[in-house]
Length: 450
Image 1 (cartoon, rainbow, N blue to C red):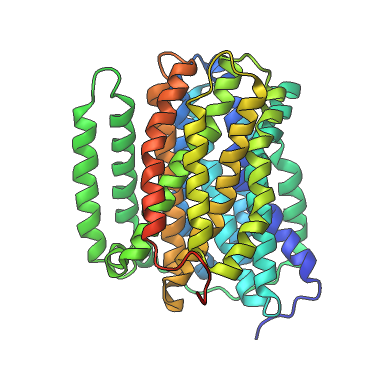
Image 2 (tube, rainbow, N blue to C red; image 1 turned 135 degrees about the horizontal axis):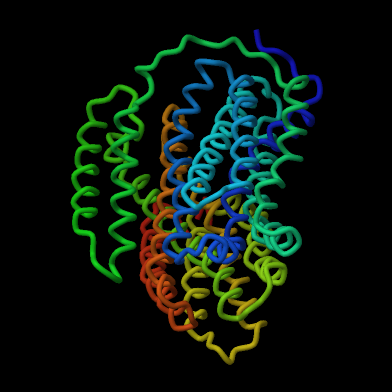
């Protein structure tokens, strides 16, 4: 029998405080990268692994944690995830060297990846009235923490150095853990079935992505052809191995069933590649080239984050009235326009011009995120929603990983406005892909009934 939640708002707050940890920690690092480069004597390519390893661990961890939530019970796993994040955060703040910090970032990602699937499981089970509203509130927790992470990180690094971006997790962890003890319902756990977890598929996926990253980061020096071979062999092996699995890590069969859904994944991966190139690239550029402080950089980044949050309700209303295609096309053109405008920015340009460009790019993100997710649900069968959502998140993580590799390649040896333009030119090509895929999506641009 489903336990009745007496105070749904407190229930949602408890879960929200936990689920915001993954997007918050993935974004706060952007303003701290320059400080960490100096602390550990790193090239930008080295520092970019702090981004890649977090998203790689999140991509591998989240599907596994969803299944473990079913086996051990979502409340237990939720609280275990908070403990893991706490341990990783305290260890990271006292990291003696860079490899140790990388390990802490991976552990932090795995722990925070536990919180979303277990939290969603409890919402779907225990919130029957107003479930859509509850999910929307949790989405706000996640999107807002991700959007304002650079601003929060900038203030913290400027005031208390880079260690503080890890220690800031503790107020959220402690409050969420204490609330979870008394608020979250105990759900009967299932049986542990190791065969349900595709360990081999996960290992092949990680090997393939690491091989790809190593190859991409070597393109400006001695090219690691062995890394390309490693990527190709692991990727091919992964594909054929996943075809045979009853519960695959990634449902590759599903990708071939509905080409429009595959196009949405490809588009969303491209959108995130572009967005995170700017999201992680601008703070480094502002600090190392324009010589702004971490705190000022965080404030400037509000233009990228804030406008995305502001236009999201407008995008939602357009989706309700016209469907997902129109806002997706608008978002694609805003992304194309903002990227193109970045090529007009030069060393003599005033800061306000960069802020305007960042605002356009921020608005594109507000349109793109919600329209891509809506488009996905419009084109999948209800029974496939779970697996489709998992692949949607995987495409987000892949785009983020590729963005860090592109930045590591272009910003590694020298960082100036010309190299920022180089990133923009590569992103402009992907913007054209995003626009083409937006028009390719079924639907009309004048309205649902037009």
